[in-house]
Image (cartoon, rainbow, N blue to C red; front, side, top):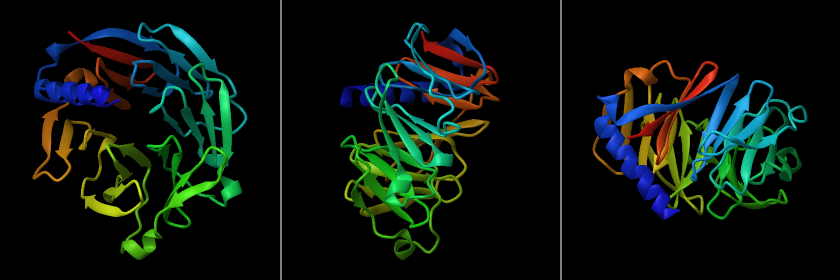
Length: 269
């Protein structure tokens, strides 16, 4: 995993430096369809979600290798976490339910957060120990829950920590730290024990992620990178072919650009 993260950061740094000229990347494939969301795991497999909540897994060549068809049970898929390809998380916000599926998208487990009296959640993510981070909005706490739905740990009530309680949409566990991203208030950083470390005033970024303690994201015009503890934000223009994208994801071998009814894959030459 550390090697994969290093390669991801290396590629991002290289790409960031070359962003003003997109000649280092070429359009290698276009996947057409009514795609509303996607994700890519650390081995290059692509997960495509269509408007009917069908999840399809493709290999690096774009060939279908698995399909998840339990589309009408819990409403719309709100978030897909592929941090661990052997335990993919599908979060159904309307039903406060997390479905865990294996590498072939067979159901492994289902967690109804309502059984823990967690009734309002937008942000979930895989934890360092393969448990699941959940931000409980009503109780203003970050909780780590086990596969059986029991509570493993939780933070202090955020209303005791902050004057204005965050409303995160992302939880990312990476490199020994846990990041909560609130697009309107910034990034809140905790350790694995739930102790608050720092807040970074980065707002308005789309496709926020963390690569080796580097916070990265974009808007319509620029890619941004900020090193945790650093002095400033680096930026480079978004290349013309990527503009008007719904979502962009940078991975070790390619850049994935979601546009209306298609996912474009730009590979490194």
